[in-house]
Figure 1 (cartoon, rainbow, N blue to C red):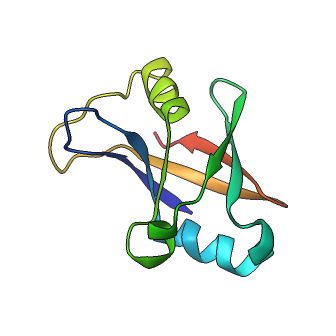
Figure 2 (cartoon, helix red, strand yellow; figure 1 turned 120 degrees about the horizontal axis):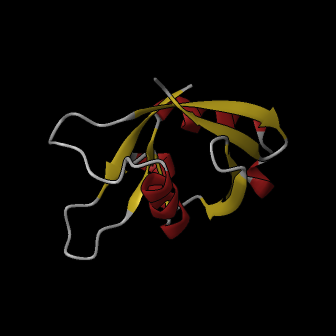
Amino acid sequence: MIASSWKTAAKDITYGFRSPELRKCIAENIDPEYAGKITLIFNETEEQSNFNITPSFWRKCPEVRGNNIKAYFQQIRQLNWPPYKTYKYEIIYLGGKHFEVKKKP
């Protein structure tokens, strides 16, 4: 699945990954009872973090958001990007509620 870097335009910036494909994958593979949380494993840093899936994720905003994503973007030097030039990532479903994130070259 492909995801794009994402951030809010608000004063307190929140960072995340935007991926309609991820929403579809979660809906198809994870029991709805447990679909409120997923684990992302960041390939480049070998760190992993749990993320809550918000109700808006299912309606119109397919973003996984959180401070750990900001830290990941900082570590791989992709925290800032020009308008409409987001970075791309590959998200790989590993089973259960686990996903691996890799930056695309």
